[in-house]
Amino acid sequence: MFSHVMIGTNNLEKAKAFYDKVLGTLGVPPGFVDRHRIFYRSPSGVFSVSVPIDGKPATTANGGTIGFACSSSAQADAWHAAGLANGGTACEDPPGVREGTVGKMYLAYLRDPDGNKLCALHRIG
Image (tube, rainbow, N blue to C red):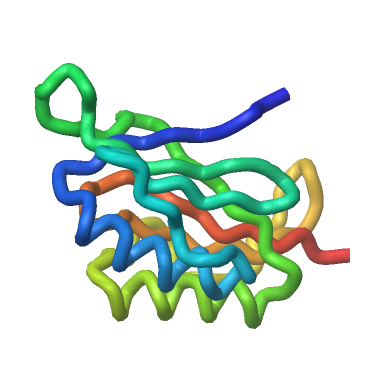
């Protein structure tokens, strides 16, 4: 359904430092900078960060969350720790198991340095 996800940033260097570390915990290579954008390519799609081309400040999506698939709860914890160590802030409940209508999941939430809400998700069983 999706070819890529792109979010905005007000500081490309800070965003690259954050996402290189956070996505690195998921096995994604460091991002490639192309003018005002950073691209992270993986077999499952492309994640990118861009300075807005309209010249206005980047803002966060109210109610929006970008989820990253993890292979284990340990990988989600490493993702969360890398985010906190590189300018991210914790949000929502602490990382842990949540049960819902779609089954058990291990979730970890962060906000990136620009305030975008992110989630690491590992489906259990």
